[in-house]
Image (tube, rainbow, N blue to C red; front, top):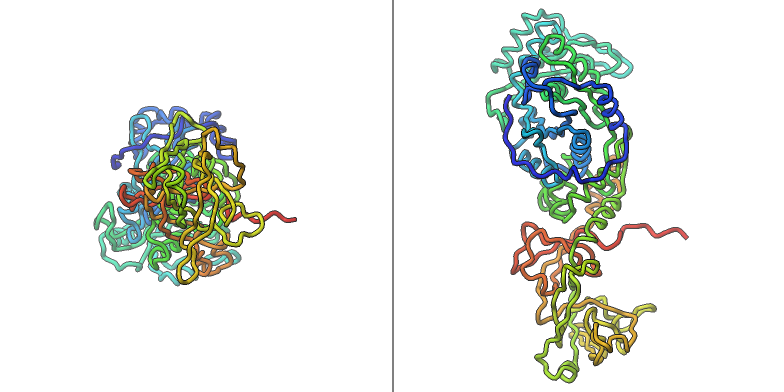
Length: 606
């Protein structure tokens, strides 16, 4: 069976530290110790029992898979599954397949396929191993799935049902009432085979009949009450075009995909636990018929990772996009990986959050601050520093010419690119007679404990000189338009007189003569409640109105020519990234990734 080639990205794997134990690791180590998969053949690509029997011993000790459906963009919840599957494969000498579960043509698009590949690579993972790219598509297995369905029919293990969906639903029963047999359940294999081929050949209307597995309508597990395994659906498929008008159901396709790919440990989230008996039933029946080879895959379930202040329902995320509450799937407020990338989150911080959350048999909630802590821990030792003014107010130094001999003089200043890495050098900028400061750094009538600019007070301009505030200028409406101050001579940072005058306040600034005008997008959490859709609440009712603010400010001249997707810390304001799409050298655009501390933290109880 064929697969589509890929251009794999480097894996973050080998150099990362060993992970803490969890029940999935225990299961894998148990199987490896027992030699469960030792010596099993692998045909070099997905295939049936005969294909693999002709192959060589599998070089992979374990095989796992990340199997997204290409019906939307990956979100932060998927990152958990990606890191878990790829990480376990890495740690145990195996391979993780990237497989698209593309069995639902009405909702799947090539756009999503491409976006998923890009995000898995961006997270740092690689589906190439042992010289082979393991990128697969469920739709490439449609021929085998159809063959397997005919095999089940011939063995009396499947039948074509022509009841309406409502009749099927009513006859299924519930948790206290057993189901009742369909009137079509007693058809002969020959009759069912003929009807199934009519379905395949397009002789019946969409929804008029389905193929069902014949198991047990009285089973206490409702999923074993003759589940549907094929339906008629006339829809163009992104990969197979119009070749098929019948498509396999996910619960039928998924175990077959695992078996064809020789997956050892099929890891999924807890909502699939009730489907495991059908998973095992189907594979055993096909192995009995010689279509699939032992050892068969085993399914294991782990708890889903939920993040506060986030929704991950694809339907609800699509609603946010379609109704323009956000600006596309990669809006930096979205929990999609594309949005998180544009916001400035690092792959390492997302991997760390996923790894640290472990794997358990229960669903877990993490506070959003856990992700931001991982992000700050990653960014702080790496990114360079710079000064920026987000709410500019002019500061006029009225004695500039007197102190420096000329109004045209520019006093050079410098600061380390990174305070803990002197080898990274110094960044250069200069003082002039007019600067930009933050509006909040001035108060005509200062509150108690205010140590910044107010008439008569002195502050240090960071990396520059000490200035003394003399007053302010106002417009006709009484709004402050500029602050006036005088330079205190011989107080420049780094000179012998710098410590002669003690001040309590230090403020950041950007020169009006060399500062770069920039658009700064101040992003925050999209929702104001930790669980936006809890209890059936309309999640749109708790959208955070302050989740995006766009301001026009100034940044220091050292950032001229900054490339897109450059992360840095604006001193005092937090971590930012130059936008990967809108940023230009002559029109810089920076997105705030996160603040220097958690602004959502609840005050400690007294």
